[in-house]
Amino acid sequence: MADPLFVLAVVLFSARLLLLFLLQLLPGGVDPVRDPVSDYAVADAARTRVLATTASWAAAMAWIALGSAVVLHTDLGDARAGLGFWLLALGLLLAAMPLVPTDRTGSQTTLRGRVHLLAAVLWFTLAYSTIGPLGRLVRDPAGQILSVLDVAAGLTLAALVIALVLRPLRNCAFGIVERVFILVVTVAPLVASIDLASR
Image: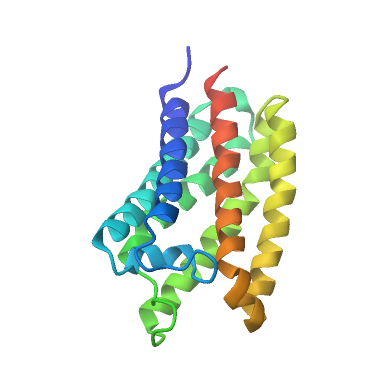
């Protein structure tokens, strides 16, 4: 029988993907090519802000469910405890991020915005760094898929840093690259959750 926590993670990661897709259809004044995803939480349209917050909390609960399940499943081996801790930390970080919204692109930088940026860097790093270890917990073909997603996440994270540093790229590519990265780091734990739920 499937573990309810892994099933919950599947449902929540799927909901996160759906909500991210809806945000692209209802951007509320956010430019998906130029602006970061976090701008949805401070968008002009209230509907967009609510969707963004819901997407963030869905991701937070998904990572918490996955982390809890990994920690509790002793049959996954000793390495699971450390990974489970980082998955839980990732979930808690994402749950807190809506409480410290970003500065909207083009507005004056505030302390709150800097804290949000640091939290975003931490969540990107944690999300990327958990893909490889998750790949070692699952069976093939899920393990092979996670290997590909691990490389894709690394490449998009590098591209994201380059787009952030080089201003001409920031205006024409940052938003797209960030959305691809977030897609990859959401699909990876979804694939792992599906495999682990099917055991």
